[in-house]
Image (cartoon, rainbow, N blue to C red; front, side):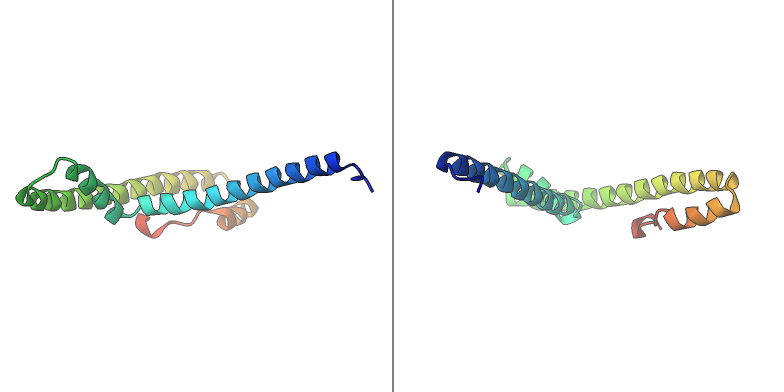
Length: 124
């Protein structure tokens, strides 16, 4: 057996522990990052975040109601800007694909149909 020496066995096991911990941390980080990014895309999160920042000003109840109304309007504007941006991006993508498709052979057109990106709901 290769691990007849206790020191070598300890070094091997500690190295294995470090590798397993690093791999686990990597995958947990990826999962956590995707959860956080998904949450940041939610307009409710935008409003909550803005209201938390404005709460630092210690507003009166009247001010808080006014802030709430204004933040709602702003969030709706941001949602519409985001949708419009996505639509604009897909317009560019579709124009580019249409230009590219003009130069393709029939076999290449079939392959393009397979690999063509799918338009998200927000872009319609």
